[in-house]
Length: 425
Ligand code: HAX
Image (cartoon, rainbow, N blue to C red; front, top):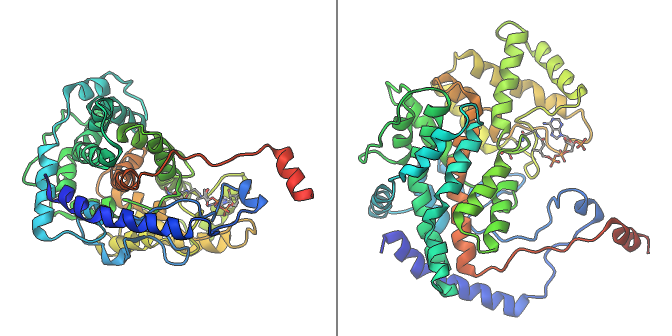
């Protein structure tokens, strides 16, 4: 048994007992109320889900297991996976054990490469990536054990197996999607001596002469790992996982949500928007030109990608992290300079639009420019990178939900005439 598995087997039972006791004592207490506006407004701020891996206070941004993001910048994504699941960072020995475990599980079955190779060359990279995850469902430990009559208290262990198997294989799959989709040549083998994100960089095959691109990828894969339970991708996965569909099905479902332009695809759209301004204004636009371009975008009925958030009411600390990285490693890059300038202009524009709740940049506003700097210029690929990272959080949430024995998700809906009757009575 791996150290991670053992650790969870030790810490989960008392947590489950505490939850049971709390429910016994306080199960009928009201913790949230719902207004009609929230019913028709995407359930904003309705507290109806539990997520123990991370939380997102509107005035602080992402906090993973009580640790603010700025204290996690230098960590490896494997350390974050351990933190999400266990609630504390791993010791050196625990980290090594997890890395060994991931290496052992990293071989991708040949049929996955065949499926990717047989997809249309111009498929969206997210479609290729997500199809590969779904095809891998054939390997699900959860489904095999479930069909053999696995008892409910072992569901989390089988889900953990699925999670480690998936996480171990994602860098190779994502890297091949990149190479195949953008004609970059043959698949590159992993190097068992490299950590998870460094291996991903190696398999992408992009030049990294001084290791700075690897540093960015490590940061990127850490920052995108989780964002509490109510965001569209995590919530979708939770609903699917609650039906006892295995993690391959539920992760793939969640990543389909991430592929939407209001969610993860915004990183692709945002860089497109930045490059459009640069093309239109012949290089580096002025503040006045950017302001005009922002108004033109809004007046044509489109959103400014990378700005606004359903929960946050401050500059996303993940954007802050990317901005600091850019200032340190590429201060003279014109695309990065434009991102920084947009940050000086767009919030002031959005603040003037009454209906917009949050004028500040989110995670997707800056990451693309940094990837672009290091030669990852194919921006339709960016949501795949996001997905590789978000699989850590979605998977950790699934393991914990199965350990808590959460039932099938099933909120109540009503037709409009019933709501009308309720509010008019
Ligand atoms: N540009 C233009 N209009 C915006 C806007 C933006 N950046 N942000 C919000 N609005 C608009 C909304 O479209 C909505 O308009 P309608 O009522 O006409 O539909 C109105 O302002 C109210 O929206 P809100 O309450 O401020 O925001 P929501 O919670 O409804 O939506 C979104 C949050 C992130 C979807 C929204 O801010 C948006 O579309 N932003 C641009 C796309 C984006 O960057 N998405 C990535 C978000 C982070 C993420 O999930 N990454 O994966």
